[in-house]
Image 1 (tube, rainbow, N blue to C red):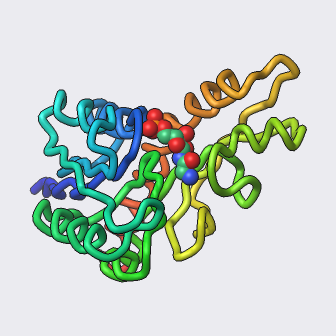
Image 2 (tube, rainbow, N blue to C red):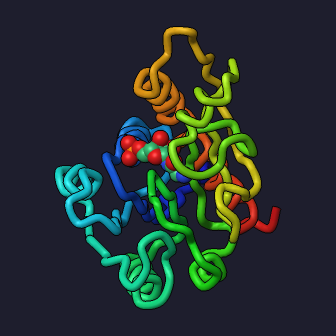
Length: 206
Ligand code: GAR
């Protein structure tokens, strides 16, 4: 007798503040069968962020959650509302995709080991804002992107996957960020799939 193993795709929530190209890469990878997940919601702290529009076009629930009372950290009322929405949609894993707020301990604890982020540098180099500009200013020759687990620091959690990008003499901030983003769109689905495989392994007691 042939036994067919079926598993329900992991319920993935995506949090973003901007354009949402990394969210799009995750959604495309799911469509192409490269990522064993379903995106249950997209949440944004920016009301008119294009990531929300991208999600709506794909019929994925997309919600603005006001960041108040803080601008750069997800805390207080905003943290509670985010947690409520994540629970409402049954999220099992969270992918930050250009989400420009610091995650605080309550959310980290509620989703321990289940929050990942993509950052546009080879961490631990150039954490923080506009890492590609930091790389140009630093005169380095190789940069890239990093997918990592989120911890209480800023861009400091354990690294899952990195991809490199060469810095060219002719690079502007825009051209370098564009090439980093090409690598991000490959790295993020692959890294999230690695995390899902690990979660499934743990569930099987491995
Ligand atoms: C990406 O380059 C991502 O690495 C960066 O924001 C951009 C979002 O693009 N994130 C950070 O800098 C976080 N520290 P997207 O909205 O098109 O995915």
